[in-house]
Image 1: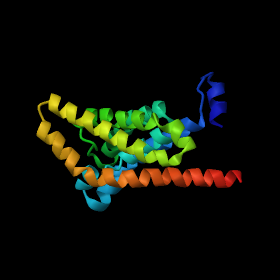
Image 2: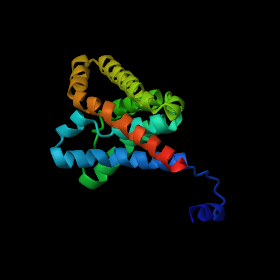
Image 3: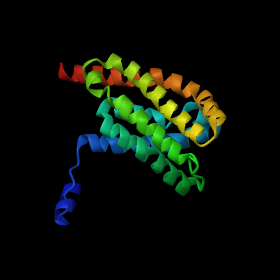
Image 4: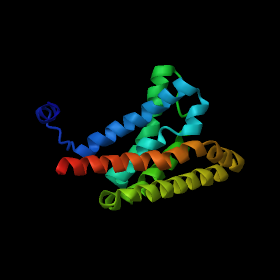
Length: 186
């Protein structure tokens, strides 16, 4: 149906499975913070980092290009959706550039492992850890550059529970997907 509309208006847009999955992960990254904030309060987002999980999945599964795209689009979508629904943007405008940069790094670094992960799903563990370290370093550098080094360290410390959880959850999802794909082939 969508392709017919595009043809009728002579719009040339290539819709791929990866782009549809990217859109789904971006929407998940936009709505997960709303769920976390609704269930455990505003401190939940900074502690559990719900937006990071779909970005890491996107990078590991789809590659660096899509990981960066999801990393850029997710905080913007979350900001706009939460502003429209709650009248209160998440993340706040001051943190939006930090989130975009950090999540972009999460997406590209995890995406560098995507081809290897497709062959050996256990490589999702180091992919997630490397992406987290690189992304958090970027966040800290940005905070230092803005004269807020102590804030950057506090942000990293507060988000440790979410980072630890993602080191386990993201690879387990990828391993489960790999097993289900292998099972479907058999």
